[in-house]
Image 1 (spheres, rainbow, N blue to C red):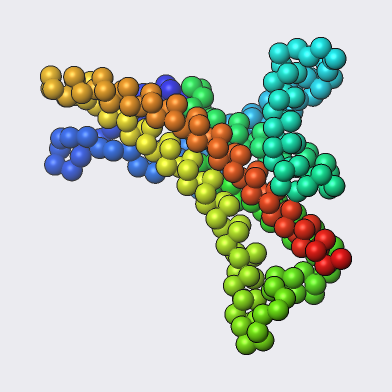
Image 2 (image 1 turned 90 degrees about the vertical axis):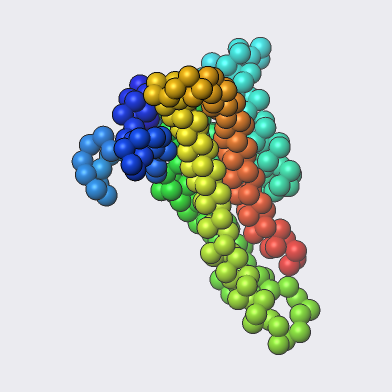
Length: 274
């Protein structure tokens, strides 16, 4: 939702039940179809997701081709972002022996999620792409497939399930621990990974929209007291935008960090057996 669309929606907010009052925003602000209807609609988030992907591809190719010993500002920023993922996530979590081959995947996760998150405070969009559950699910499915594939490839199918249960447990408790670990690997991990990203982006956008719409209502439709309150309410909206920028970065980092930890777990568990 762009700033123009947000302003239009605020000025047309319906009155609360009873004919008067402020009507807070609902989850309808996340359903922004541009073309088509129902499940086959092309939404605004899909378009912004495509724009973000195209922007990243063009930017990364352009900066990589112009790489020099003395970096430009753009190259310096790109290298800083890359080294942050390479050294601060991949190498620290996976280890120095095997981390390099996973850096491209983790760097892709981090940049895609970060820039799609930032659409929530980008003036032309003002709606996080990852605030729609389908996008976090898509990222999570890739992580899910990768860490299971690594574990099965290295240990074999039987060995992969066997390693989920620590050695030395009493025989009677093994089935219970095995069931819990199975749920963790196949249900809890992907579920929490997707919902954490989605929930933070969803909630952050709702809070910002609430403060912005409340400030607009107070200023445009309120009495003298409410008009005065619109100033601190608007300031709170600005503070929430800054706070949301931090959350957007942290959620991209947390998702990438957890993806690296799951990959490291598959690699480490195999290594422990030899």
